[in-house]
Amino acid sequence: MSASSAPDGAVTAPSQQPGPPRQPGPPRRDRADQPDPSGRPGRADQPERPDRSSGRRPRSAGRWVLVHAPLALGLLVMSAPFLWMALAAFKTPGELTASPPVWIPAEWTLDNFRDLLDKLDLPLHFMNSLIVAVLVTVSNLVFCSMLGYALAKLNFAGRDKIFGLVLGALMVPGNLMLLPLFVLMSRMGLIDSYAGLVLPFAAGAFGVFLMRQFMQSIPDELLEAARMDGAGEWYIFWRIVMPLVKPALATLSIFTFLGSWNNFVWPLIATNDPDRYTLPVALATFATDPNQAGGSNGMLMAGSFLIVLPVLVVFIALQRHFTQGIATAGMK
Image (cartoon, rainbow, N blue to C red):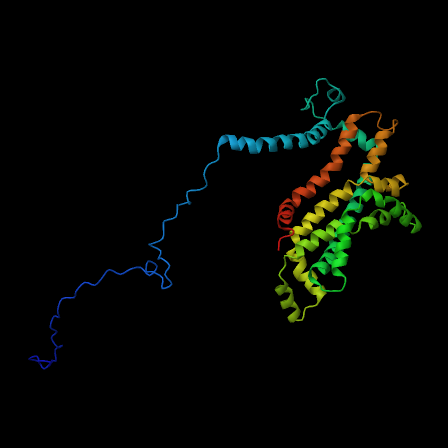
C-alpha cells in the first residue's frame, strides 16, 4: 500500500483493509484437564472427593461419656488424698476429728504451720532438701547428657555394650544397692555429709537412656557440618546439641528433682546427725516422737503440704517442656 499526501504536505498513515472474519476455534481445555500422555486421566476425569473442610463428624454423647467418665473417676481418685492433705493443713483440731469428715474448713487457720515452726527447725531441713535436690538434678543433667551424647552420636569400640549395661541397670531394684552404697560411702568418710547424699545419685541409668533416645533424633548432617567448619566435640555438645534437647532436659529435671526431694530411705541411712536430715526424714522422725508431734495431725498435714509444694512449683514451671519431651523422646 502507498501512503497519500495531505494538502499541507503531511504524510498520513496507510489505510488498512479489514480482513476476513476470524473463525472461532475449539474451546480451550485446562492443562490439568488434558489427559496425561502416560494414559492417566486428567483432573476433570477423576471422581470428586468428598469435602471434608466442614470438620470432623460429631461424636455421639454416649461415646463421649464412655471416654471421659473413667478419666474423670481416675483423676478424682488420684487427687482426693492430695486435696484432703492440703485442706487439712488449714483446719482446726475439731474439724480434723469431726465425724462425718469435713472437707472445706469452716474457719481457715495457720496455727498448724506456726506450731510446726515452733517445734521443728523447718528452714534448716528445707534447705538441706533443697541443696541435695538441686545438686543431684544439676549433676544428672550434665553427666547423663554427656553419656547420652556419646552413646547416640559418637562411634567408638564397645558403645553398644555400654548401652546394654545401661539397660541392664534399669532392671536392678534400687533398694538392692543401698547396702553397697552405704559401705562405700562409709569407707570414703562421707556419712553425715552433703557429698554422701549427692554422689550415689549424681547420674542414673534412666537419665542416660532418656537423653540418648532424644539425641538420636538430631540429624547427623547438622553435626557433620559443624565438624567441617572446625567445631570440636565440646563446642558441638554445648552450643548445638544442648539447646536442641531442652524438652528432654526439662523432663529429666522434673523426674530427678521429684525423686531426690521425696527420697526418704537413703537420707535416713546415710545421716545420723539431725542437722543433716532432709525434710521427709525430719518430718517422719517428728511424727514418731510423742514428745514433739503429740498426735497432732494438723501439724503433720502442714508439713506434708510444705513437702509437696516445691515439687508442684517445679512441675508447673516446666510443664510445657515436660509434655513436649515425653511426646518426642525416642522419635527419629
